Image 1: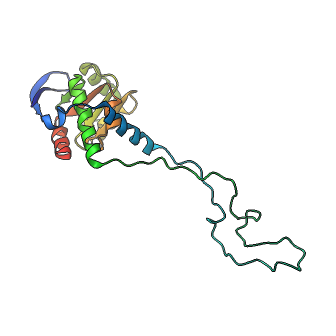
Image 2 (image 1 turned 90 degrees about the horizontal axis):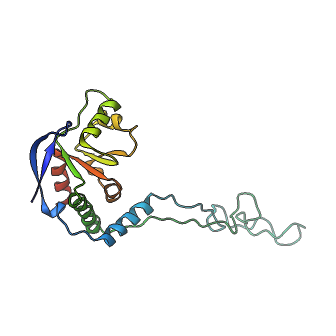
Image 3 (image 1 turned 30 degrees about the vertical axis):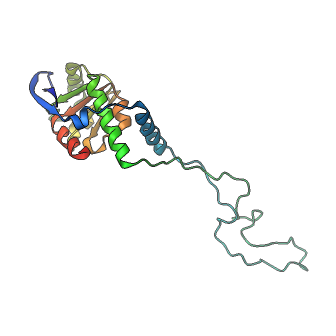
Length: 206
């Protein structure tokens, strides 16, 4: 197991923590990470516009009036594209970008992303980040002490003071352990884990 230092908010070493090799020491396969990120971003896309064609419109198929003798056009049913409320003839059909991935593939990609952060010395474990009240100035002081830039902070539970203190700081994202995903891990320069989250991540990926 890899042993990492645990720091406090003043960047002082307070203890050490063992990280399981089954999660933080997995060989990284860039092609797999690319596939997972591509699917994840595709699932965030909204579907394109779609219209209802003649067969999609709700309405009766009864002939509106007889074929001959009225002097009017030869109407079939009320869903005709020529009538108000009828189907659209050449409108777009729409496209749904959602895709699915095997659960084992998603779990393996998450392990690879965590392993890449540890291997790149971009992972920092902090015992806690707690404030008495939401204060951006205090959070910026912690960022400077830990020498953080574009950072993802993973918490072990609800931490409203931290979330409110960091939301106006550009390049910082605070996320709970259950929401950890491959894209956000790869999209940050530094990963900050609160010490209790390591056990939560281990339980999720075991």
